[in-house]
Amino acid sequence: ILIGAAYNGRTKSGRTLWNRIQMLDLIPFRLAHTRFMIAGCWNICSSEWLKYYVYLRLPNTVRGLVHPVVFTLMVSAYWHGFYPGYYLFFAGYAFYYLVEEGVDRKFKRRYVVKGRGRDLKPISSLRYRIYIACATLCTWTYINSITISFRLLDWERTKIAWGAIYYWPIIAAFLLYVVFKFIPLPAPPPETKKD
Image (spheres, rainbow, N blue to C red):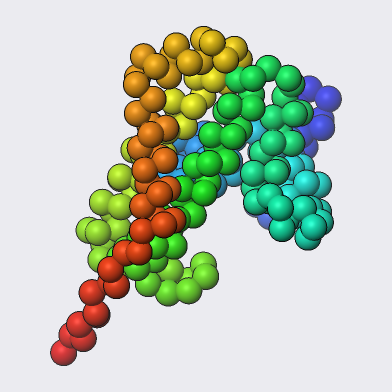
């Protein structure tokens, strides 16, 4: 702000905007219930750079070998440095993306919301609120547990910390991945028409 690099013009009402360089959008970050929402509100400029210069420019030959999100997060780990904790964190973060993808496709879109693409509407308000509460709890529990590796940076200390909680968030995420990736789920109940 001191050198004016964050200056982004004015709104129609004349309010000055200082959001060109933005690190954190605190309220949406704290209320996020998916990994995608967390990434969009934390380290915003770096996330945008990774999106436009790594994720969107990834050649199809690489996309066929590695999931684009996994590749992008490994570039981010390399960018942070060579400590094992960075790679453990970003690999765990990428893995949780795959877990969320499976939950979204096989559970949320069958039992919680209806519609296609971004035009999703809750099937039931109560069911949607319960899903959001559970998703928020699961996401933050997992993210906080893998963040330990980012803070400690060392493989041995990370193993001790994860061992102290019996690796349970990582095991739970792995079980969710297996269930939603490999086990066929029953068809959703048919919708009943109201008179």
